[in-house]
Image (cartoon, rainbow, N blue to C red):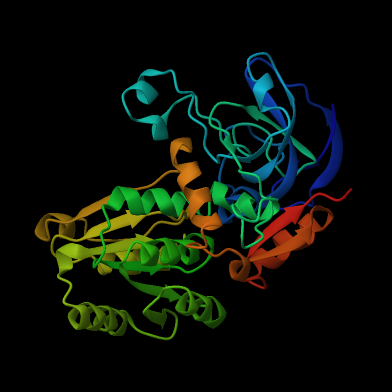
Length: 357
């Protein structure tokens, strides 16, 4: 099938709309893209020289939802189904996958890095791991009227935060602090609140903080207007108000900035937990021995296993996770302008690009 795709030839230079032929092979599906979210990682590949495994020229985009229109041998049963494409698809057969370490599968497929991504009319991808979407036309299943393009952001912005929260062992009554209230953080706030946690959010945008306050955050702080001691004091005050000890406090670094990472590490207390969810190529200076002295834990989170996606779809369709206030739509043809606006900080919501025609 002839596919139209926006291709990066040189980082920072305008993407070019090009046609190429895509035919699904063994176990592969060809997905007609309904929507593709623009992630902070895409900007890192494009502007900051973060290396992709495929290399340029490459079509970026890893937050994809759509409809399977063609399939290779062994995947024919997917044709006609609406799906969310996982941002990271493990092979399912290697030693890492079979031993429960699919997140670090050496054969994993990450659209927009390992293979061409979703800023295109169609995406060719392994069918294994695809998440089927229930009938969105059924009002009993989808009372809020969620659309298929809406669900594209589940593939990273929502699912990565979901897996980070699961791995943290967050329980009702714990304190969850999100350093960064963009795509990852804003959805993480909602998930943590839905699980019964007391939630705080830090960001440099008043608009984003206002939205998180409406959707689960008990405390919001402008990180750029407060010193670290003031931030730490406010967090300690919230914890004291709710009687939450430091060992029941989970810190989630979701800003993907060096300042955010430094703040997040500094907030970890005795028996505490730090989850590094955002990415930045920049380095920070920390005293790693704090983890020893505080008997604390820090770990990174990469993607989300496909097996968790159905539960995330259910959260959205049940109204426990709200998407609309945190997303906005732009035509795929405006991709170069959108990247420029996001890079300049002129857009605060998660942008979903939709192919025209």
